[in-house]
Length: 158
Image (cartoon, rainbow, N blue to C red; front, side, top):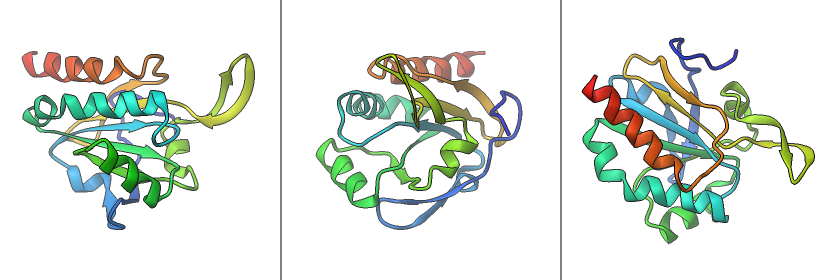
């Protein structure tokens, strides 16, 4: 099932850094930003995570939660979250099934070469569980959190 704005977001259950199961359904009634990234503690992924961290107060004020998903193991997520004081939840998707369901894993170009891997992307799931916006391929990780915040703010004003 492809991610489509206006359609129900695929439901998932993944483990967080404490080993607890987290489900998309846990956040019904809130906006949820689900962002997919390739690897903990790499330059682009760190810039994106720190961007969400730095805007955390403003994002929370809009009744929104952020979930970061990568294939990294919990130990890696724990170190990454602690090192950069990330206030939001990181989830582990080692078999990449949720990423596949969200179109965040597949063929991509790296330095002119086609490879299979994590596609940096973000899905905004509304309080009703439907996809409000899908950023299919995030080009500039450092700038992306501000664009997400801008979209949330625009929707609030509308």
